[in-house]
Length: 159
Length: 442
Image 1 (cartoon, rainbow over the protein chains, first blue to last red):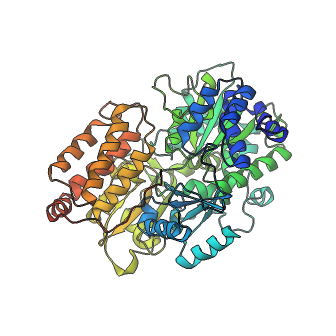
Image 2 (cartoon, rainbow over the protein chains, first blue to last red):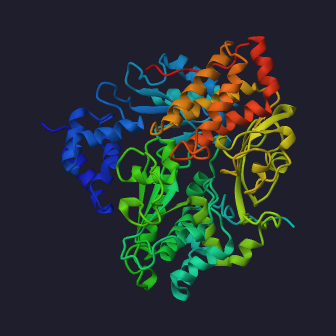
Image 3 (cartoon, rainbow over the protein chains, first blue to last red):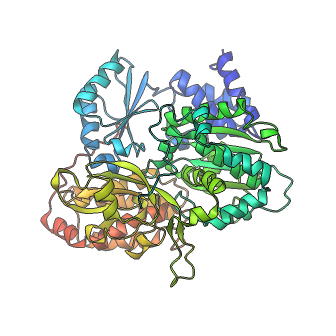
């Protein structure tokens, strides 16, 4: 039984015509797999390697460099919530916000709530500095996150 | 005379991202002109004449970069568009991509025509989800309207544009790190030469340009190089190596100010003007202690240095690394400089790619020392060691492959020399930082 179903394989193969070689599809493939499976299992690394005519070690090398991809032992929750800790946010309460989110969810950065709904992460500058402190919900920014806005956001993500 | 924004002129218009509205405001006029009336070499010349310097941080003359491509190369030639905007406190590329993607796309098509590139890859950092979607929508519209694909506007010019999403690594903003990442590898910057113009993406000649630079290209082709040169700061006559700081620039202002924003101004505004007239002054009626003038890599300015002009020469005159991304972040008088120092060190220790030992170890040890200071365990002699590390990592001392380490060293060197009294006082008192810093679980 393969980990990547037909749909995922087709989506990965859809990237091939964009690049002059297959290795360039490594990052797109890892994104496709992680979006769907909430992590990249070892077996998926092997299957991506087969699709791209690479050694699994090459895919693993790229994947682990970025620190963005999770393995099957530590998969993402339904929503990945990033809280910015870089300078512009730090000056406007970013670190305190991260602490608050951590307290409210009862988890530390890097962990996922027991119900599998939210993974908390700290982020380096999210590029939302005009709305500091800011957070990223998967890949959408939320700016000027006050305590009240945070509660609304967490309620929304727990639903 | 009040300056009329050019790059941000369409901000706030309803549906500013759509092709119809963009065309209605004169969009793709420059492309039509270039394809029908100009040779690629003429487009290169007008950009070269304009004096446009790269907006990504290094300030390399854009037209000159294009001329480094080998002549009569059989191709393919690639354009890599750097939208990996990850320099802390910088968000101008995001605003361009989210609000007016066609303006950027027109610049991409023009640059591809000028450089004879047949494929352009827009490397967008993963965190910019909305930017990615807005740009993809613009690309789809362009394909549907013969602005991309085969025989663009009926001419013998073909171009494909693809978005390539990053995965949260700062180093991908370094142009050869970006290329390695695009190729599906770890984003380790390459040793240069060969420069990308000779051997870049997929071992082919490649130009890497920043989003704001390409948006400028659109207007330079539309309005001419003389217009561009009428804005900004001409070369300093006493400095024969100065190429000038022409054109409009997107300045970001954030931190302890009343109105954090991104504003377009002629190059050469001072930090004080930016803070007072555009950022609404320091928040809570306080005074500023200092700022970082162009992303944290460029170092730190004290409040006394706020009359420095933010052009390609100004920040260097007060010991900063350069203009950088022109993203100013102000911190007020109540801010502990140790917290600012810690934040900068933590960023670079986290983002060093690990390829060069001086950077990997240097950023790590600087962070450990500053962390010790935060916990009230710092020693006066640590300041000297921090300076020593700062002076020995980077491409300026010649010990690393890319400039990340120079950026890591600069805020440290600037803070230790410009805020020495505060640091010494802090170290002697044995105080601890009041800021909390939450660590990861693993």
